[in-house]
Image 1 (cartoon, rainbow, N blue to C red):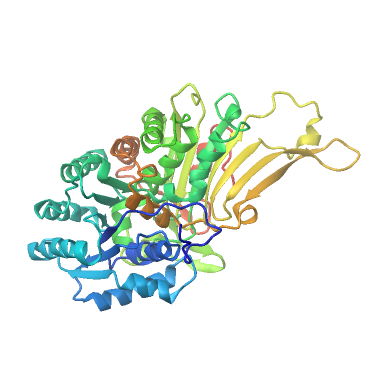
Image 2: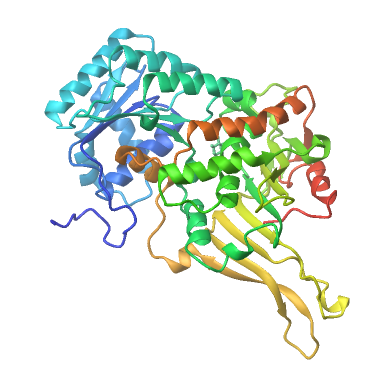
Length: 505
Ligand code: BG6
C-alpha cells in the first residue's frame, strides 16, 4: 500500500476510509457547523481519513457563492481544528467545497441541490453516495425531509447510499419524538438514519465498554452485591451562552438528562453484548433504558434548579433570568438531578443518581461507582475516620482517565487507614490525542457504522423516563442556586435522605 503522508503514523485508531461520497450540511452557517462539523471535516482530511473522491456541500439562505462559503469554512476549521493546520490539506479540501443557496421551502433550491449532487458524480466521482446532516432546529425537519423525498435525494439504491444525520433534541417528549421518528423513517430507511448523541463519540465513553468487557477485574464487582450506588455527573461552568432561544424551551432535563446522561447510564448498567456490533450494543442499551424506574417520591428524589447571580473563577456571573433573551420570570431549569433505579437482577436496589447543571464550579463529566463499605473493619473507629467507600470513577472529561479510590495504611507506628487514589490518565499513558467526538461520529456516518448512534427505540425509552419528571415539574418554580455552587440544597438533601453525599469532583 502507498503510505499516506498526511496520516499521523502514530494514530492507529481510525484506519478505515469511507467510499467516495458527499457530505451535505443543512444549517451550515450555524454554531454547530462552525465549531464542530467543519473542523471535524478538516481534521479527518488532515489525517487522511476522507476518500480522495469527496465533496462537501453547504446549504443555507445566505447569498453566497462557493468562494465565500469556502472562506467561512476555512476560518471555522482553522479556528477550531484539533490537528495542526496545514494549508495544503485545506486547499485540496477547498476544491471540493460547494454552496447551494436557498430556503427550506424553496423547491428550486432543492432541485438545484439534487442537480449539484448529480454533477458531483461526474466531476468528483462521488459515486452517488451522500450523507445529509440536519444541523437545523427540529421544527425545520419536516419541510427539509419532504424536499428530499420530493427530489428523490433520500433514496438509497443498490448502487449508492443515502444517509441522514439527525441532531438532538429528538423531539420534546415521547409523543413528539415518536412523530419525528416516524417522519424520518418515512423518508429514510431505518439503517440510513444516524441520530447523534455526541457523548457516545467521546473516547472515555467508549472506554467504559473496554474497561468492563476487556478485563476480568471489574465485572465481578460491577453489580448490586458490591455497588452501593452510582453517581453520574455532567457539570458545566458555562452558562447558556447565546442559546437563550433554544434553552428557554428546553431546560437541563431535556437538553442533557434525556440523552447524554441516560446513554451514560445505559453503558454503565448494560450486560455484555454478544458482539461489538451496532445491533448487539444497541439492544443491550435499550434493555437498560426500558428497565429504568422512577422514584415514587419525586418531591424528594427529582430536583431541578436555576442559577442565580454569583461568582465563578473570580468573575461575577449573571443569574439565568438576567441572561440576554431569557424571560425575567423564567422557570426553565439549568440544573436537574434525579434518583433512578434499574430493575434488573444486576442492579435491583442500587440507586443511580444523575445530575447535570450549568454554572457549576467546574466542567466535569464522570461516572462514579460507589462500593459498599467493608462488612467488618478490624480497626478502632478513630483509626478509620477518614475512610470513605471504595470508588471507581471514570472521568469522561476533562483529564480523561479512571481513578480508583481505596483505603490505605498511613505510614507510621499506628494502624491508621485513610483513602488514597490510584489514577490512570489518558494523557500520561497514550501519545495519541483523542479524536473529537464529532470527528469520530462523522467518520462513522460516512462509513455506515451505526454502533455509536442511538436507535429510535432508545430515544423513545429515554423520553418515557423524562416525561413524568417534566409533568411533575410543570408549573413549579425551580430551586435557586448561586452560580459557582454545586446546585441547589435540595439536591444535597436528596442524597442525604438516604445517608449519602454527592461526590465533589
Ligand atoms: C450539548 C448541550 O448537547 O452538550 C449543551 O446541548 C452542552 O447544553 C453540551 O453545553 C456539552 O457538550 P460537551 O461536549 O462540551 O460536554
